[in-house]
Image (cartoon, rainbow, N blue to C red; front, side):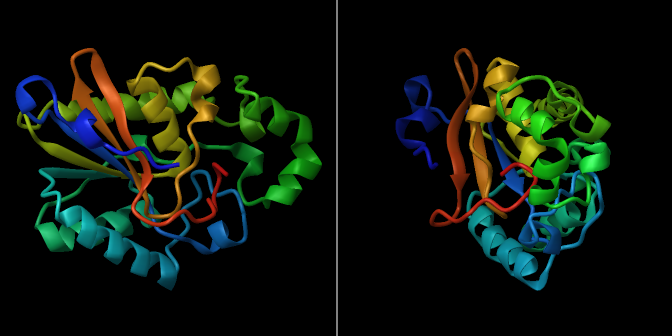
Length: 225
């Protein structure tokens, strides 16, 4: 899914408001294996590093004003590629980590279906589920969204904040910031590795301007597929 920014980027009088770019980390070995990562600290693969470098070159052209990132290695190392090109110092915050999913973490997609099929189905229906005994999606949004808002508030009127995080955390943060009911957050498709979504300020609050942007469509490999 890719939503064009078009006229949505500009408010009344043609002035550009603040924007938040929510950027998912590059590929990891667990992504390729369809193994649920959650808060497990898994590093980028060589492909993941290359993805981060390519995306960083594109994002640099937007001239971001600030970078914040999850402190997990896959997100921190992705953010470092943008920092190297912009000279900005990323601020790392554990509140931007991926959803903690307890017993699901380390299991493949097929293993989760086999062991926790009912729980998985309920999650995909939008029901509040503590996957593997972990966090509710609303709890992830409770910790991540305020961090994004706090840093966005520091931007100039036309400033850009880049948030480097994880697929599930980004989805729940978007849902919270644009005011969707938590049961409908699942309607936001997952992010491909090193793709991003863009929120912009509007008269009534934050709006989704772009989603899963950055490449031609590719399979979503990760906890949020």
